[in-house]
Image (cartoon, rainbow, N blue to C red; front, side):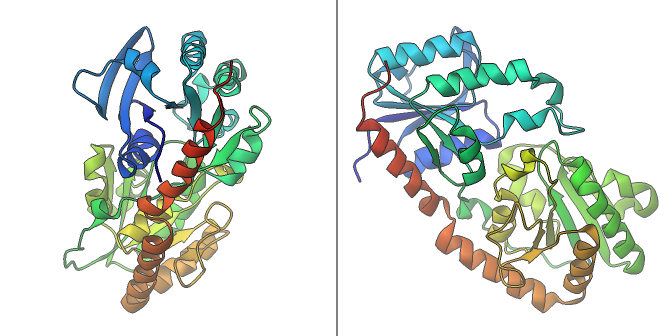
Amino acid sequence: MSLPRTLFIGKGDGAVTWYRCALPATVHGCDWIGLKGEPEAHAITTGEVPSEFTLADAATYDVVVVQQVAGPAWLRQIREWQDAGVTVLYEVDDWLHGVRRVRHHALAEKFDRATVETYELCMRAADGIICSTDWLARRTRSLNRRTWTCRNGIDLKRYAYTAPPRDYVGIGWAGGTGHFDAALPWVREVSVLMRENPDTRFFSVGQPFADVLTKEFGARALSLPFGALEMYPAAMMHYDIALAPAGKGDYFKAKSDLRWLEAAALKQPCIADPDTYPEIEHGVTGFHASTPAEAGEIMRELVADAALRERVGNAAHDYVVEHRSVQIAARSWAEVLTETAAVPAAA
């Protein structure tokens, strides 16, 4: 499939830029950058573009995909690109109205209603919106009738690790901000299990959830801080069972199933909330737990049965290879880019 010449502009150099810009761009041979700041005062922090590239060159592309930008400067920039004949697509993978309603979210105070409306102005101005989930696409369609879902895919080569021999069974959680209230009840179930079984440990990657357990369990509970994205799979290799709880508000309904994809890429069985992770086949490619008590029972079963951990972890890996690798997921991006480029950019 011959694609229009496309530039992906990610927000900074973190995981969201990697999954939602760098990976689809790389699969399709498109240019991409990670950018901080506003158009008039910005810094390109990462990317794959010609060495002489500047942001002014964006006007020479057929399509520009811009990630979660807001404010008058970006609104002007979107319209300038459109005036130059560029099709501008807006990428978003969070329900922004939900951020302020999540306790302990590091950005809750920065996403008040008035601020979110500045994001929505840019979404309305764009030639279309690309979302990471169907739920988010449905909610966003009121802002822009041209809205698509491009689900996350996983870069399996980055997760090609082999777990070293060890004398414990590790349980772990990995991710970003906003999950404290959802994760804490499951962490309490982990503590009960760790009292019952001295050969278990708990690890949290990113958020310091394991700190809740260190007073009682000492080194058996370890919080690994945020680090370079390249180190993320290695950090997850400390454990054997992955946890993926989720809250019940709209913020979590919009979330993708990336936590399960990452665990599956490492051949780890994942216990997950059924609403946020519906693609899991319970008992085959992972496990669904609607309550902390259900999660605790499944943890006990997995800790006691190494063969079960291996069977479900391998089945999850095989499923993701066939259905959710970045190469598979990138097909939907190609379809969107081709469709939108065939229609003149908005005036």
